[in-house]
Length: 349
Ligand code: SF4
Ligand code: SF4
Image 1 (cartoon, protein in one colour):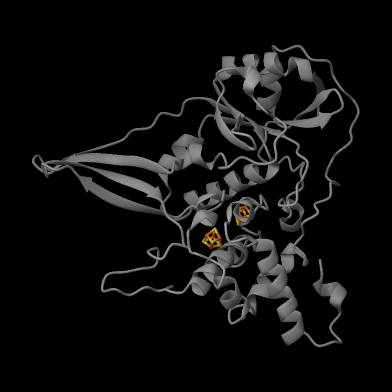
Image 2 (tube, helix red, strand yellow):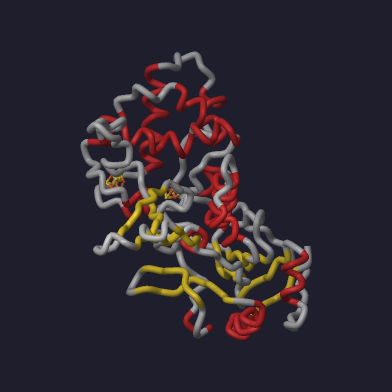
C-alpha cells in the first residue's frame, strides 16, 4: 500500500484540492462538545479529531425525511422524484461508520432494491480517519478495529505531525495525483488500539447467546428504565426502518408521498389496524432492537449488525447501554445454562 505524509498545516490545502473532485462532506464542531457531518464551505472549520458525530453519514444516503413522489387526485397522475448522483467525497469517516454504510448497502440491495438509497450511493468516495476510543466506543467487540480499511479509498492515520495517508484503492491514488505529498515508508498499523468498553464474549458467539436470551429477565429489568423515546434507533447508523405516508393538501387535489425514519422502540412501530400491537411492552421492543443487532441479520450474514459506535449509549437519557445489556445476558446465561464444568475460555471473548 502506498503511503504519504500529510502535515497538519497542509490539511486545509488538501481539502481545497478534494473540492475539485466534488462536494466534500466532513465533520464540523456543533456547540461545545458535539460534531456533525456537513458540506465543507470553509476548510479551516473541519475537525478531523473528534469522538463521534451526532448522526452518521447514513443521513446522506437515507435522509430522515424525503419526498418520494407528488400526485394529483384530479388528473390521477403522479411524478416520481428523480435523483442525480453528484460526486461526493466523505472525508474524516471513522471505521465503524464506514462499516455501517456497507451494512446498509446489504440491507437496501436485498429483495426489492431500494433505488433512492442505491442512487445516492453512486459516485461516492470515502476517506477515513483514525480516532481515539472513548468510554462509549466498542468497535473491537464487534470486529471493527479503528483501522478497518474495508470500504475506504484513502485512510488518514493520525501521527505526530499530522497524518499518514494510506492509499486503499486506485480511486484513492488518483485523488492524490495532482496533490504533491512526500511518500512515507513507515508502517505502523493501529489495529491494536484498545477499547475500554467491551462486550465480554467474542462476537462470533453472540448468535449462540441470543439463541437462549429470549426469555431472559434482563428485558423486563431494562424496560423499567426505558421511556420508549426511540432515540437509540434514530442515532443508530445501521437502523434502516422507515414509514411511508401520504400527505394531501387542504384542497384534497394534490399530495406528496413521503418517507421518514421509524424506530422499533416507538410504541406505534408494531401497531396494526384493529388496535393490536405486536410489541406492546418496552421489554419486547428492547428485545427486538437488540435481536436485530445481534441475531436476526447476523444469522444470515455472520456479522453483528451493531458497529460499536456507542451513539445509542451516549444519547439514551435513561442511561441504558447496549454493552451492559449483552454483558448481563451473558452473565445470566452462564449462571442459568452453563454448568461449572463448561470451559469458560471457550465461551468468553
Ligand atoms: S434511547 Fe434509551 S430510553 Fe429511549 S427508547 Fe432507547 S433505550 Fe429506551
Ligand atoms: S446499536 Fe448502538 S452502538 Fe450499535 S451501531 Fe447502533 S447506535 Fe451504534
